[in-house]
Amino acid sequence: MSVVQSIYSDNEMRIQVNENMRTRDIISLRKSLAERRRSGITPVIGEFKRSSPSGFRLTEGVSPAAYFRKLAEMKVAGISVLTEPKHFLGSYSDLVEAQSTGLPLLAKDFISNERMIMSSYNSGADAVLLIADFLSRENLSKLVAFASGLGMESLVEFHDPEFLVNYEPCDSCLLGYNRRNLITMKIEDNTMQILKLLRDIPGPKILESGLKYGSIDPYMEKRFDGFLIGTSLLEAKEGSV
Image (cartoon, rainbow, N blue to C red; front, side, top):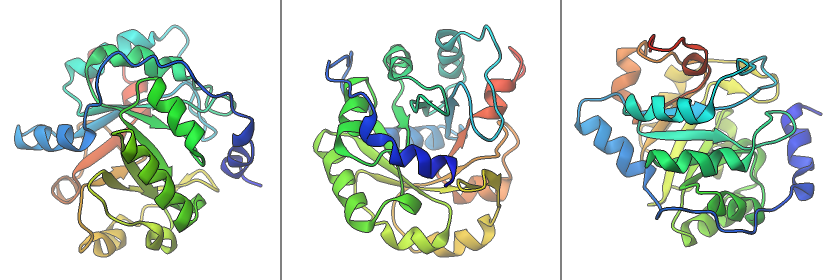
């Protein structure tokens, strides 16, 4: 069993956040990405994570609050926050803290039930990540609808094009292609082939994993509506991004 499959199997034991700690109304990630594009700014979703099975570890002493402020100063379109506690050392409290930026927040987790979406909402998230490779078409549709009922958007991600059939475009959806294989944790870049599959699918398209801020291929820049970038931003020295 892979790490990600193990995470999904443990989801029923996750502690739910029942207290509503939202400090502002829902902010649309879709609109924020489009606004950055219209302003001539590369539409980036900057990610915060503490650890990753792929080998990343957050440098000791890095302040989440300072990093969130840094992302806001960089005019990113939104912030993705890892909330899975066991393998990524994530916390819903990081979402709560990131609300102060005034940017749309994506709860990045391995969500498989409505309780996890509710926990993300109560912690300040404006959108949730749903992974098509690990969710049935029926469950994916149910979770998108539940999130939408709360006013939230859903970034529906896939790696294996086999699971793209599980995606149903909607007004509250974004579609993400993750270049990382979540079974092996390795980057498998089939972006050129994937672009052909995405051509006739409506709605915003997001490219994820293995991207460096300021070094996005101009061809990809024109064909995706947003770029989720984590490790290269977190590892960058102050003032170097």
